[in-house]
Length: 270
Image (cartoon, rainbow, N blue to C red; front, side):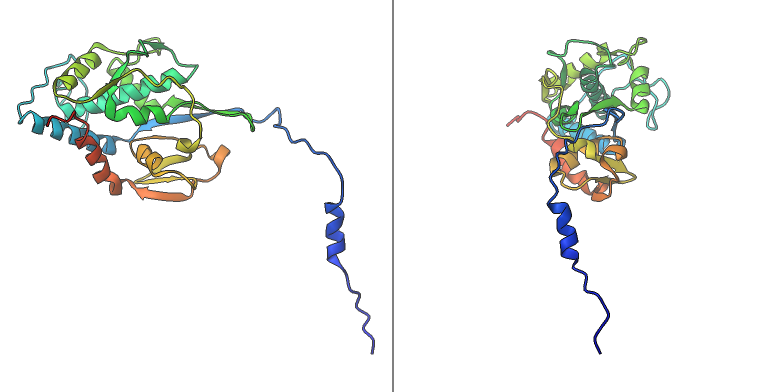
């Protein structure tokens, strides 16, 4: 008995779409978002690991005879009573690092004001990579910018220590300059001048963030950027990049590496 089933050749139907001649010129829609703001935060525990390692190196080089004078600065944190002067080297490393990060973000962000000499701005040399990692990223093809901004919690802390004035401008308080003098006194390497380039070539650093005790982000990020994001990280840009589903490392797993960097932050005294 002959079959009544018809044989359908799907290949012929698919080829119809391949053979059509049409000119499509993709453009970015006018109503799409063109500016994304990434909040930059300092990770307290890893920064303290770095600071404690630097303090250990200074104390070892000075044979324990470290006397950091009162710098006219009082803060409140879990380890200090209210109004106590900041005299610990580790505390000053953390605070000066936060000021340097704010100075860099303010330099790049056109909506933020600054009142200091960027060419002669002094900072701990160990922070150089952190400062250079963040800047404005411009994607010409898809017509969008990523602009770093200061996290609200960090901003409040900087206001409390006089690094952001009543007008909202980032300033360099006198205690910061005094701290840099003391760091140089103990042979801690410092650098001068914020990076000239206010842009970054890739958005990779913005594709990383901290989620609890882990560094997560998008695929294909370098080990250096992961290490930087352990100390300073930005908020998620899920609307732009999608879900941050790649787990890179637990923060605690990078402690030894961070401490090793801190121990090498002094000039070679040999």
